[in-house]
Image (cartoon, rainbow, N blue to C red; front, top):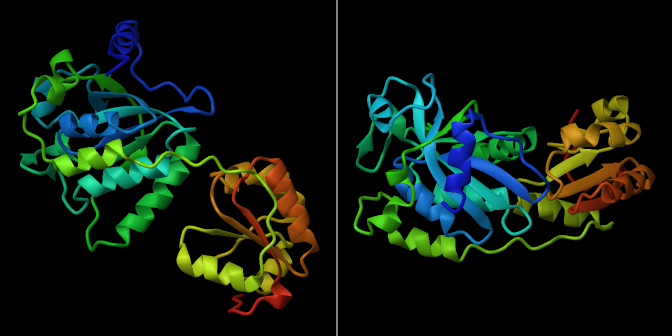
Length: 299
């Protein structure tokens, strides 16, 4: 809670909704994972997290008290605002840590805590993070028959009372549903490896192996829509070469995602890959033409 006083001052001045992320490295995400004491402690230990504060997200009452939220009729979730340096830790690493300490199959409950204020949830304040959160949550959801993690944009965030901030530091014996082993895991979370934006040429077979090993890769077909409709690699998205500059920002949100790029013969895929590299995409791989594709083609 390194910035609690500054945030409290902003709150007194009338601010409730979260500010937009300021700068490429300075980002925020909001995690509700049952009692906020444990989630705050967990996230505060991660190298690269600059601040973690407890509060109440969304809901229908402005600046609610703990007593009001505890009634369960205000719609607020006990939530931790996590500020982090994206040059040191990425959102996917924070999501992985978060999902490792919650039970996503439970509604309005974590550990011994029950009530709507303990509903799990992830809340974002920008469209880039929205795409990353939804993609990651989709993978997690596939693991369970029931999935009750709330996924939504942040509409408001109100700081919890001061005695809730750094609660487990003030009260080391305080109740927490998160195991101590997770705190050690948070301390040792691997830092972001800075990736270089560069053109890489791979074979179709290598592309197949990458697809099989990592289901999060993005397959980018840079042919025309008519060519795409005539037959394409399963799971591919169509971003025509002529539209790369205009559509990359909206269709390819994550600049560190692994992008497998192809066309018909290989000429356009090289041109598209080069443009994406120039735009700062760090995971671009050109596997050439669909004519050499050894796998299935769908229409």
